[in-house]
Image (cartoon, rainbow, N blue to C red; front, side):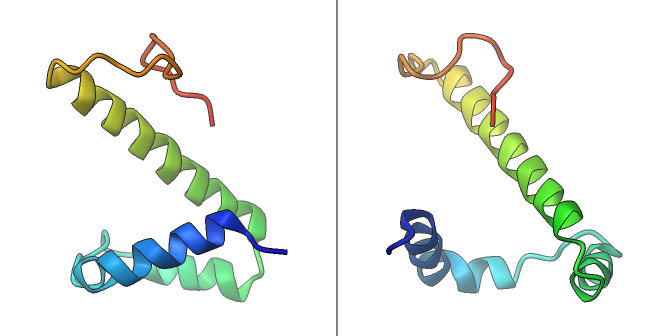
Length: 83
C-alpha cells in the first residue's frame, strides 16, 4: 500500500532538501532530537512534528490573509488551526 504523505514528503525533500540542510536549527535542538531518537521516545517526536505542523499552518494562513488573499472556504475563519 502506498502512503501519499510519504510520497509528498520525499518529493519535498528532493526539491528543498539541499536548501533546508543549510538552514541551522536552534542551538541544542539537534542534540535533543538525537536523545529522543536514541530513547525511542516516539511520543515526544510526534509532539514536536505536530507543533511544527501547527505553527507552519498558522504562519501560512496569516501570510495569506495579510496579502489580501481571500482564504479558501475550507480554512477556518478563526486564527486557530486544527491539526
